[in-house]
Length: 176
Image (cartoon, rainbow, N blue to C red):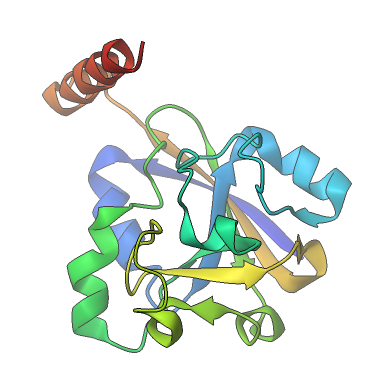
């Protein structure tokens, strides 16, 4: 399995995400990668105790159905994909820490439960339409063809960064 690193400038984030079109991948915090390797795969976060880059929604469609969530950028509908792709950016936590992108093999992609195939079956579960898919059970490392570690250089003096930090602080106050 190929493993590489990439450093992005903040201004390159949009082009990077658009460049993922046609791929299927799982994103996790880089600090989780060693644990994934020790486990020989990405475990289903059934009890919401595994730290993720996207939070642990109690009503996450794929987690509830014993699947590992992945980004399905092979979505057949380009228009629909573009409408929904920014609802959950794979770089969501990139200004806080490095991320690991784990790209699925063709064999693993053939086992996916894709949103377009099940839409309408579940209505109250959280899912990103046309973008998110689920891999049933543990996604073994043997089904990963590449790991890309991504570091985004963040200008902590930028207005965008300060606004995001203010929003994060406001959300923390609401939760308490």
